[in-house]
Image 1 (tube, rainbow, N blue to C red):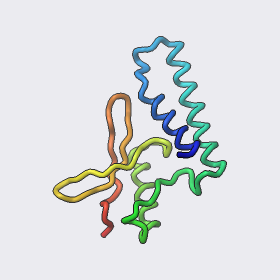
Image 2: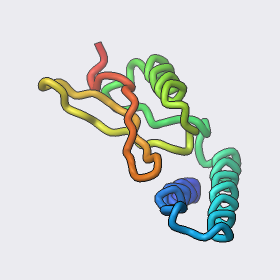
Image 3: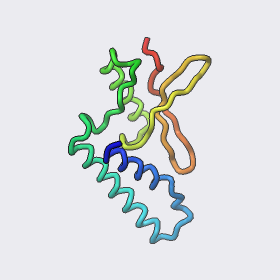
Image 4: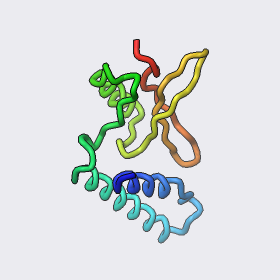
Length: 121
């Protein structure tokens, strides 16, 4: 696991903190911490661990359609209206078919955005 992965894990952990239960001074520190870790993640990514700081690895089933995959994942992030540093790719089974979804947490709720079928057409 690379440094940028650790930064994203730290960001995810910070986002899970229930800030509503905290005093204002803690809320302010929490907001500062999220901004700092988010900036760190961006800097680590742009320093060169990965080719594209906004990329999600192309699943094996999509290897022959990588450009199409990149478009689908970009559309999912746009529809979800979340930062590229948020979200994880998951698989959901619906009516005996499998689909990729982008999932992220907003407060105590898990949100999902459709990406594409696991097996491209």
